[in-house]
Length: 240
View 1: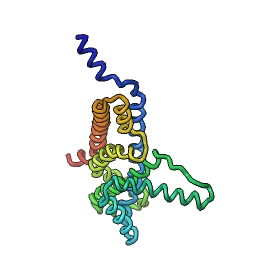
View 2: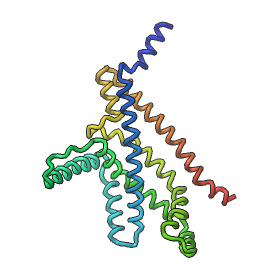
View 3: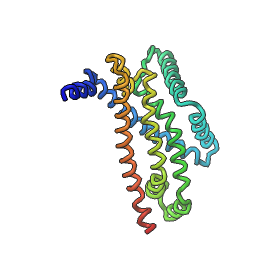
View 4: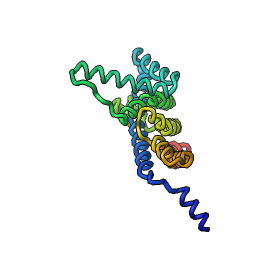
């Protein structure tokens, strides 16, 4: 029993890197949540652009989604990251401010939001198309403003159709936060690698990292299932 207790305690000993791992978890969650907010904003604008009556907006929305879907995410992340650095550096020189150092965290949020906002745009577009057009026409016939038509008629039904796709996009986005380590952000993967290299227990810390991601995705799945049931209540009742 003493041998078993000794080896088990050694297996789960974080060797003083517990706070580093915890910080990595916090950075990963903050990065994912803020990127999700930006994805929803860009996705909504992209969907409206692709469904717009203005040809230029439709072209712009299509160009955005096509670019993201055709170029690897890792390559896009490097292009956006270094592109932002170049733009900000040139802007600083033009204004006489000098070199402006970009915050890796906010750069990661912008980069992930830009990339995965395109996938959210397609999800929102498909959800809006799934709404029967007669309901929107009826709402306008009752004299509702465009804002009320969107909030009372389109948004609620759109979310019912969009949640499954949004759930998949969120899980992909969450896992993609691991890519930000290439731009110098100390996320969960970077923390696990640092702890593993320092303690020569790389396998243990990588497995621990995977278990944390598994826990977060499991909780996310539960929440998404609840939201899907919540937005489907009215539809189920009407079907009955």
